[in-house]
Length: 423
Image (cartoon, rainbow, N blue to C red):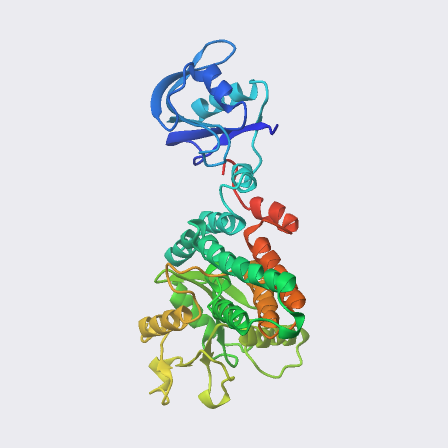
């Protein structure tokens, strides 16, 4: 029998309302000790909440009761919706500590129990974690699509198709003449499923949306990179001087452009130097230019690095005259071109982000989907029914690891550790 756990599941007090959640086999008993009679399942009722030992009135709260398995965790659950003052919350939590069989929940433990009891799968748990951490509208929508089971439902469809293919392969092993090989129709269906998985793997991933699109500002020394960063951010985030080589390390500033998370990064001026410290900064700048999702180049367009998403910027347009063809005139001093620049950056950033409201894969999910796709690709060109059936088994196992049904023990602690206390 699992422990019964409790925690404050709403925001840190003071607040208008505090929600305390209790989950486990002793949840209803604990609720009765504090509130007397409980309401019917999935019904809210106002109750006086009293200390179970002294009978002291602690609060008047709205009480909700959920019976296993029809609850968020799959266990018996009680929720107390009371007043959100610190003293009230502290008194309720102290009272619960004194109830035998109860203990305070660890971070993410409610969600972990929901996963272990089959209320959600691993992809939905990952979506919930992303939803809690979401800071932009795009992040929220992507996380919600995952948390609401978008990927789980798609995997279920794939698993059903794969199970039917597996059944055909097993039947061929038992009943068909080995000399006939594998039914061509089975191989075609297998190739179709492998192709569908390949299309999903080619979709934009969720990492740029979660971590932010890396926008690197690069160019030779004294090109106006730091001034441009400060103008975009609206404050002095980087040091600006007339001395070449002032910036010796990269400086990253998080931004949100139209709901798109951006990591705007200033870099050391690119040049040959004998200064050991500056040379390290130049090396890091070159690495960032290579890794960048969007590159803002302040310098001669002819010397710009080759990049798929390059914006040539004619900086200091207030003093350097008209911009060359293909370059955007920008002045950090007057603000000229800043709006057009940010619109261009947002537009380019969106090209590497998943479509809003669509399901995007993270690295773990994509790795397992690639395993399934590889196994199905191998099966689609197979001749021996036994080998094809084995490839199908490998693909099924990869799907099980995607959803958390198998082989994910190493990721669970790290995932649920991302959740706050009470979630």
